[in-house]
Structure formats: structure tokens, C-alpha cells
Length: 402
Image 1 (tube, helix red, strand yellow):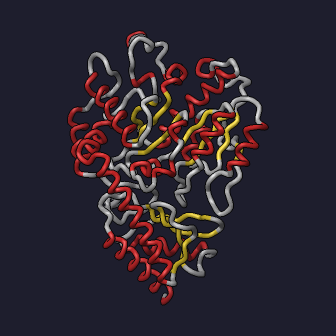
Image 2 (spheres, helix red, strand yellow):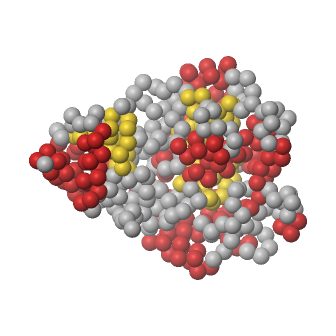
């Protein structure tokens, strides 16, 4: 077992579990509901899920023309959204892909810095993990060059699905949502926002400008077991209600009369991949009622302050260098003069892990062998930042003397 819910577990992007969310999770196991419907037997869990989705839309400042549901993680959230987008693209060509398969459909996927889970979804959807056009990036950034995006859109024939970043993994960079909103007025494309953890920047008046315009997207994916600090596993998808018919066409149980007519009553089993579902909404519902918008604002702003503090202290130390500016809540850095030494950096991360006080994960950014520290835990404090810096320095000293 690892102490992944702990305040100095900075690996991947892993949140902790707030007390309210933990109680909700215990009750989820106690009640043991298979959340499927909002009417009839089991409707309480379904209605709590709908209520929780509405609370989350309010938390993120998103309009009520979205609906959504809970899934296991960002991969299945992206899958749900992109499967619906694929159906939309097929409809544009007169093909019901859910019933007839891809056939001779032509679907263009474009993205600047897609997360690996979104690329994995392209594989699972039969589109192909390599079958997307990479939009050129802004210089020194991970976000899309909007002029290049516009040029691709103007030249592409047939339906286009754009996967935009609401916070990249290495630097938490955001595509320009306002500019993409303007492009939506000129071009007909499906816009999906992968905001697995960056979506929580919308909770803060200081940082919500990073997502301004995302309300015009067709679909959005957000993890709850990251910055919302609910136990694994939990994520939500949001899709525009105008796409309800095509989403149901993808996921409905069309040959199961015992489940009822999917067009006559709402049921989550007709809107997402899973027919067997844990009551994932309850921990989130507890957390939202316990802490409210202000509580999540504090968590987000505290973590961003801590990330920037670590970045500044690493730079001042003279022993480490930043691979990129700290834009939000992830610090991407390397050991000074060792950023091209893959073996050294691998050994450094291993030595840090063995000591058991801090956990971080390696990455490669702009050709630099680097380390990522992702701040998303509600328990992390400035004292943890100081302990982290001391651990990094001690590992550096030990490796220098060995």
C-alpha cells in the first residue's frame, strides 16, 4: 500500500479524501445501490446523482443546458463524451454508427496536447490512437496555436471533433477557450474539453478566467478523485442536453424489454457505458454540502500557492531548475545540470521514493528529464512544502557523495 491520500503524495494527479467525502463513501458501501434510474425502484440514488450534477454545474459556473453523470474516471468520461461525438459525426454523414458501425465514415480529430486517456479512447472507439491531427503549439507552451487551429478547420472537409485541454499534465496549460468559442460561431465542429483536474480552477475567481468560454463546449470531462478529494474512483461527464438523443442512441439497451423503453423514462444505463454502477454521487454530494463553493475555492487556491512556493524555493536553491513556469498547481523541474541524464534522474526519483516522505513521478518535457509535483491534496500545507524541499536537497547531497 502507498500513502496516496497523504499531503506529500505529489505523483500523477492524486487527491486525498475529505472527511465528508469519506463518510459518503462508507454510506455508499452500506447502501450498496446500483444507480440506474430516476423513477421507480432505486430512484432516490438516481435523483441524488442528478442533484449532485446540478450542484457541480453551479460550482463550475456552467449553464443548466448541460446534463451529466458519474463514471469511474477521466478515461470513461472522455469515452462517454467522445462516443457521443462520434455518433454526432456519423449523423452528419447519414450514418448511425451505433447501429451500423463506422462503415465509410470520415471523422477528423484535432488536438494540441491530448491526454493519453483521450488517445486511448480513440483506440477503443475504433477511430485509431494515431488518427488525429496535432495542432501546432504556441511557442514554449502546451496550448494550441489558435491561428493554426483555424486554418485546419477551414481546410478540413467533413465532421471535426476538437479535443481541447483544460489543464495539461506537465504544465497545466489551457487552450484559449474564448477564442475556440469564437471559432464555434464560424465552423461546425464538436468541441470536447478534457478538464480532468484543471476544471477546478473555475472554483476560484482568481483563476476561472482560464476556462472562460468552456460553457460553449459540447462536452466536458472532469475527475472528482483528483482536486475534489473524493475517494477513488469518481469522475463526471457533462454533455449538452441538445445531444441527448444521439447520446442515448450510443448507450441505450435496445434489445432488453425488461429494462423498459429508454425513450419513455430517464435511466443512466442508457446514457453511459456502465450498466452496473456504484453510487459514486454520494461522496461528492456530501462534500459539496459540507464545504460548499468557498471550501473548494480554498483548497484550489491553497494548492496553487503551495505549488508556486515550491517552484520559487527550487529556483532559489541553485540546485534545481524549473522545466517550465509554474502556471497553476504542478511543478515540473529537474536537477540542475542533470536534465539530460536519464539514468541519473531515474535514480534520483527512486532514491526519493525509498525514503518514504515524498512521492513524485518522472516525466520528459521539452527534451528535459524532469520530475512532476502535482498539488491537489486538501491536507497539504506550507510545512509540507518545506519538508519536500529538504528531502529533495538531501537526496541530491546523497547522490553527489555516493
